[in-house]
Amino acid sequence: MGKIIVGKISEIPAGKMQKVSVDGREILVANIGGNYYACDDTCTHAGASLAEGVLEGQTITCGWHGAKFNCMSGKLEKFPAKIKDLKSYRTVIESDNVFVEL
Image 1 (cartoon, rainbow, N blue to C red):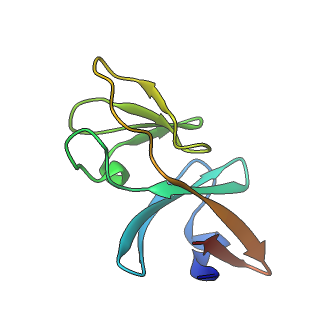
Image 2 (cartoon, helix red, strand yellow):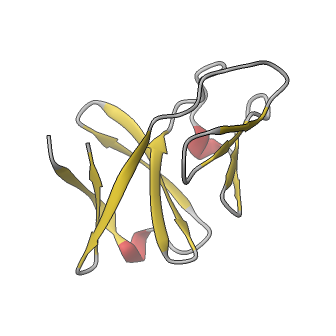
């Protein structure tokens, strides 16, 4: 499919995350120390939007039940039950634009 623009670097400051809709998918884009990472926005436990959760370092904590995911890799870090990892996407910065590769 290629790369899709998801915003400007100024719209996602360091330590923040933003939910975007890309080709019918909800994707979370996070800025960690000036590096941008993207993964699915939907928690694999109960379907919550992870954008409503908290970003601490590289860990996203779901606001509904506390599942913790690494936003750089999409891997589940902590939860009492075994749930699926998130799909992660490669990001590309060109000029002042953030792109996600699908």
